[in-house]
Image (cartoon, rainbow, N blue to C red; front, side, top):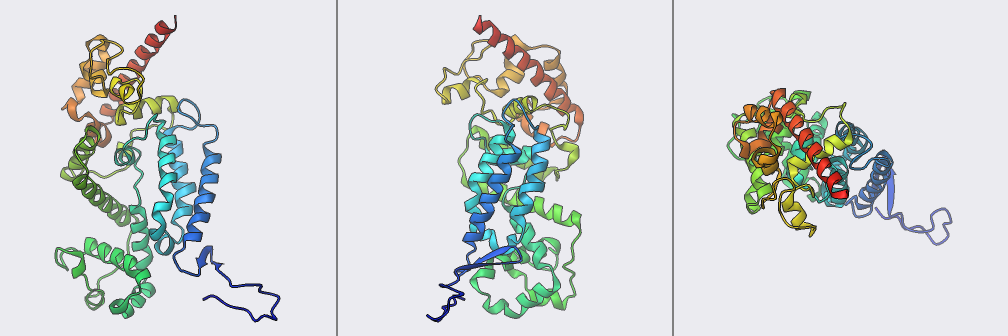
Length: 360
């Protein structure tokens, strides 16, 4: 790959370490790290321009930001993802984290899993889906079929992704485990690898749920992880899919309203006593009733000083207040989300009154 020019050559002063082919920068080690750094730099610049005038209280709302993230940033990252992104995915963690902070308006880093569920933004599993789509091409599959016994290290990840997609699409044709999938059998049985948009969306959610399950099995039990675990349990038991019917955020709301809604989802905001204590801004007492142990659940359902019609209306549609997060995020009944938002609006009005009294 590295071309060494004769000493008399003046056109090429040294070895060629990288070159661009169809928009992909290929380096001499075939790890595509240079391409990943270039993409990261471009995406950081573009995301900075998009969110230049956006903060917690002003600018683009969550509906607009998530749409721009999917169309302007993810499309750039996903180009040629099957061959260049999977090995450099850790390079983009800082970009993902800063994007979630900007979109949610959180003061502290929110739970990534919970944030992705609330925003309907799948994590790196998108790379797996893009890989499966790429490898479902008949020419690519035929090539992998010929070299399956001696697949270079570069293609091990892609081959596994293809087998996982086939196993998901035809579970009755193969055993319970992915490694039982044989590409030769796929060809002999005449199984089609063509896919529809709905199939890819369902496969994406399948991979997402599996990733969440594996994450929950290795992390310890905390208040946030328990929230995610309960949301995941409801997703699996009720076979809930993410679509516009259960997306919490409206395109007509303001950024400040959306930030307050996310505060009561992830709980990382100084309006809650337990968060103020973590941030060393005071104790964990409630602003309204002065009781200790203040958190989103306390303000929504337990604090007697801020109980009005919005409180009783929310209780009518929430089956279990302890699990209000999964009922709000996964409910197809818009009434649940509407009353949840109305309750938050009332609470934020009360917080504003408290701030005004403190300033006097």
